[in-house]
Length: 248
Image (cartoon, rainbow, N blue to C red; front, side, top):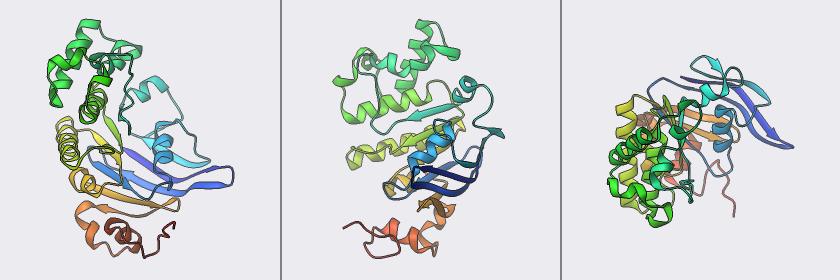
């Protein structure tokens, strides 16, 4: 579904991506891991066409991301943002139905509200939540609303950017289970960026380790602990000593 070939991206003298090669098969869940500042978010933005690579190719379902109808292309994606990124001036249901109330996916208001309430139910939130504002919700509930919004338009591809950041371990586990269930139910292709190794084990079919602008290792999550790769081994066990230099 997603194919990156020799992708490079620099910002001035800062070479962020230095030849990324990665394949994400249709209907699978890929988790990208790596230290802060290694280019994970830049990689995601390149796939969405929000950032243009300096060289290399990125194809989604065979289509170059920088060609064709942008609205139709973006309509295939859902996104759960790191901080939730809910609109504080909109009610919960309006947040969930945001894409259904405008643009090429526009639905009648009543229908959009019904879809939003159904998606809220799917993530474990009652209909009464629909007319509240984000500020009236806990962090965990806000994350669920963000997840409901990500799936509201039935996307083929869903991106999760640090889905458990700021959550306690129990709520993080709940969100991880929800993500896994929903991705499986929808048959969607998923790509997750995370530092949380419990999320990796709960969500991933495959894992890719991004370091120094390249994919150091990629493979099934079941092979992660015995990969033999020193970069991956240091990262997943949180060791200070190893080929990845810790900033002191």
